[in-house]
Every structure is written in structure tokens, then in C-alpha cells.
Image (cartoon, rainbow, N blue to C red; front, side, top):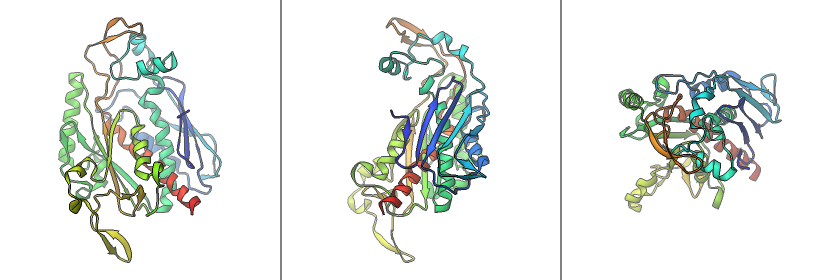
Length: 357
């Protein structure tokens, strides 16, 4: 049930944090798309653990194996199955919490819903399952290359350290020049220092990822329940640790008058466009041809290296003392996941627009 994402371009995922592998099947990929495996691997490398001192120490190569749907480096139009094997599990790190309910984790809800749970690293609830999303997103990005649509996410805030300006004031090509993935070098340094401080204190911190979609044509999105911004919100809020979504002016729009908020139409080199973009590239749930931009808030990682009171699975009081390898902030590694979910959403709606027409 709920393990498949998308309408036409779909991704069905499987796997757990400490199982044999993470994987999935992408269906709806048009035939004849150039499949660059090195690009897919590079996207996985941006997400993988152990890439810097800011991330968990779990050491995984996360090498992707394409099992079907590709012939002579092109998509065939048939399902693309893939697998990424888990090679560095340390299940013993979780033995002490086998019967404990970790605060703000999915332990209680999974146990209540299914009557059982995989306590090893969170099982299916682990952020390691986002490997499949990155592969699906990479395939969507390869398909989007022929449409001129580009997607770029970056870290815009960690804790109370944030960028003052919007995305138009930064060179987003600088995002990958630092471990925290922030296009402002000075702010990036401050963010990294804060994350390292949390790590030394055995604590964690949250933040915000901003994403910009450029080149999206007008007309993507459906009336009522399948509005484009609703689909993006659904995609982003399905990511582990995501707690909030806003696009365009977002919550700031409540402070603006209609005269300040309205995007006036103007002629842009022969096409109808808008003078401003408070709407975030979407009006009435349908893309209007302007840049689409949105923000996703991520909570602090719930696993912290300090003792916490809790209950065991029988309801008896207990003390949780976490062990193992964990991120102190998920945002830097969430950047490629945000891009992946945006890519799959936009390409899915792009294909849908072709069918509807």
C-alpha cells in the first residue's frame, strides 16, 4: 500500500536499514532516454553516509545496480529495477534498545500498527530507504534534461543561522562547494560550526532546505486535489524528518496586502509572464512558467547521545541510552533527496500533461 509514488512515472520501493538491500522499480520511463549510470551514482554519493565529518560515520559505498529496463545505455520503456546492497550494518548497536521505544521515532506507531517492528536502525522507517528515491529522482532528472527543466536545492537555514536573501541573490552553483551545501560561504561555515557543536554535545539540530525549479513550462498541474503545489507538498512531506512545507511567499503571505502580493502580468519577450513571483511559479495549482520555489523544514534528529526517559514495549519506565552512528543534522544529506522528489513530481506531471492534451 503506500510504497509506490507517482501517477505515470512511478517509483515502488523496498528494503530496510539493516536488511540485505534497498531497491526499487521505476515504471513509466519513456524509451530512448540516455541512461548515465555515473550520474545516478553521483546523485547517490551526495546522499550517502560518511561523506564528511558532519554526517553519520556509517561507511557505505551505496553502489547502484540496474537490473532491467536499460539496453545499450538507453531506457527501453520497460520497468527499470535497481538494487543497492547494505554492506556496513552494525546490528549489535541496536540490541540494547530492542524493547525500548525511542522518543519521536516511529517505534511506537509501527508497533501499534503492525504488531511488530524492525528495531535495527528503524527498519523501513529509516532514512536509508531514501536511497531508492535518489535513484528514481536521478532517472527523472535524466529524462528532464530533454525538457530544459532544472532543479537545484540548497541549505538555507540550520538552527537559527539562515540566509537573509531569497534564491535570486545567491550563486546556486556554489551549493556543492561546502559540506553543508549552502551557497553562502560565510553562512556555511557558521552552519557547519553549529552542527559540529551539536555533535560534540551529543545533541542534534534541524534546518530548512530551499528548492528552485527553473524552466518549468506553464500548464503543469491538475484542478482540485492534484494541484502541482499539493503534489510537491505530498512529495516533500513524505521525506523522513520533514515537518513543514511552503511555496512562494508561503506563510509570509499572511502579512502582505493583496496590492503587495499580486503578481502583475507583463510581456516577457513575446510571452506572458509576471513582474514579480510571490506565487512561486504556481497559480490555481498549475505552473505559470515562472520559477517554482519552495522550502522544506526538517526537525532535529531524534536520536541523541544523551540519556532520555522512555517506556519499554510493555509500558514500563526505562532509560534510553542511544549508541551507534547518527547524523546530528539531516539537512545537508536531505538536499539531494528534496531534488529527487521534486524531479519525480515534475516529470510525472509533465508526462500527464502530454496525455491530457
